[in-house]
Length: 259
Image (tube, rainbow, N blue to C red; front, side, top):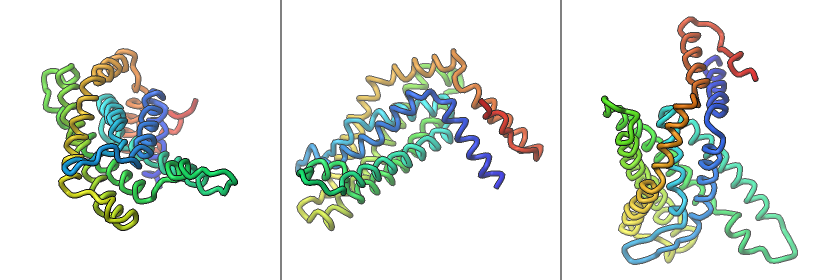
């Protein structure tokens, strides 16, 4: 019970500590890329891409920023929070879509009503890729002993973790959606081959890496400003206080969360 209470307090403090625009953009990107994933925008014999890859780079950029300042465990917690928020949004979309109306809203219902196996596939893929991205990003950063907070370290860890994380996300999603579920529920003509899934994963990862290269300087400057302005210091102080209290078997420092 004490560990659960500590985890809840930690999550509350983390959500209060991370600047709200970053969390908002992260959750928005997760929700939108799941909607866009309903449409295949490229379908060639050797390549297939869904619409989600146009915005998924934003989720990985914000993840990298959170890892850079707060660490991989904190980033994974925000991933879970985003996934739960997306599931809640999907439930609202589904309920609105099934409400009977006199007018024809077939197009709206098809897009926003969603498909359960796309939601399931994207949730599994994003959860796995987020874990890979966050710990890989952090691990690469630890190899820069001389200047772990410099530009080279930030860009290296962001580029490598984004490419591999995006590859995992794209491949797992494509395999589950278009090789496992789609042939069953949409018919054999909707299935992708393994080559299409593999090439989609690689091509999507490359495209999203290019977006990361373009926008990561913004992420780096934001992180440096966080450090300069002491953003997150309250969370770090809370973590240190929690660690000391746990080691002394004292009560959880709930007073830290008082307004």
